[in-house]
Image 1 (tube, protein in one colour):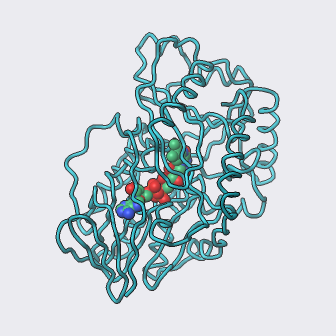
Image 2 (cartoon, rainbow, N blue to C red):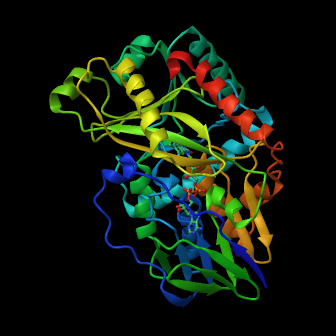
Image 3 (cartoon, helix red, strand yellow):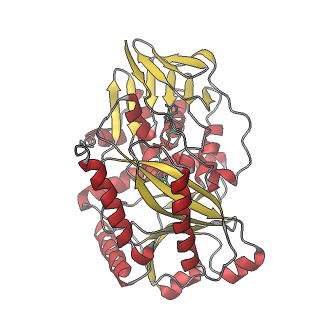
Length: 442
Ligand SMILES: Cc1cc2nc3c(=O)[nH]c(=O)nc-3n(C[C@H](O)[C@H](O)[C@H](O)COP(=O)(O)OP(=O)(O)OC[C@H]3O[C@@H](n4cnc5c(N)ncnc54)[C@H](O)[C@@H]3O)c2cc1C
């Protein structure tokens, strides 16, 4: 028997805008007393929910305990910008593009994940404001941004992927603002309301899956049966899947191999009918900056605007109110620059969320101890890759196998980080430099 203790627990601050605009959920079902199941999944984000859905289908007679430290949608899965992206999205590159051959394989995998999510969305009957296959825009604010866009377009042409080139007038027609000098439209991305999507997925899992919330796993023991312990109870099962994102490291796995970054977002109050008229543009759109360091901006069907930019390297994974406040001011400036026609519109919600990366963009995926499995570290594209990891880990653990599992197993292991203090100093410096370079894209 081996024991693993959680050195840290997730503690996300502030409800994200996505979570806060939904109806308050009913009371949480916490894990209490001794429970048994055929499967335990820890972490109910994209990966955990997708693994539970996959297993519920492939092993219909078996029971699953899905356990999260927080409410479903309170963690990163309900804090992100909601881009379920099919294309390469290398945040470390100048333009999101990567190595051609790898990108071709990656697109296929991403599309398998999107097809899985789409099937769930159709079955649940999700509306367009929750799951919308409407594509994404990339927006450039100056000549350098346009060059970056054109480089990415060339990359897409090589990959045989469609896109549409847009000029400043096209961008104004879509967004209502003349801030963008040009853009590109890529049709394959699905745009989600992340908190609503994960909450709906959790509610759709069926009677063999029990979702326990507000139940942090403090430790677990492995053996013939694995047992996980929470403050009020414990659960036992022969197979354990960890879909805890960067917190896999908190249990002692992949140590010194994962980078923890916090990202920051703000969402406005609902625009009035007059403000909607003044803004113009389309009723909903989702835009990624030409420069990966700039601002992601979304207009929601609910007549709100989201601004997401800024990052901190946070090895302790802990969010800080002062940073949410500080970067909130950056969001305000980005909003004012783009939407001067909305001078009285304030941000209503501000939050941060955790992103887990590795130096070589590799996932923390596979069987990490006997019948203990990990699908963690999504490298900035967790809406798609979390879904993919969840599907694949369920297939690996159940013995179903298949090409997605094989592809995931072929991926390299996350590379070791540089020794401290160089790693932390270097990461801070790189983020600072990248944000400076974003210029007007911020
Ligand atoms: C502001 C922001 C914007 C982003 N935008 C995008 C985007 O547009 N597109 C995109 O693809 N990605 C985006 N991301 C990244 C994306 O949100 C994550 O990569 C994704 O949520 C990872 O999914 P996951 O299921 O692996 O992990 P998570 O969603 O983090 O889920 C892990 C769960 O594990 C739980 N957990 C952890 N430890 C324990 C424990 N000890 N006991 C019990 N439960 C535990 C947590 O509470 C959490 O709910 C963004 C992230 C942020 C923060």
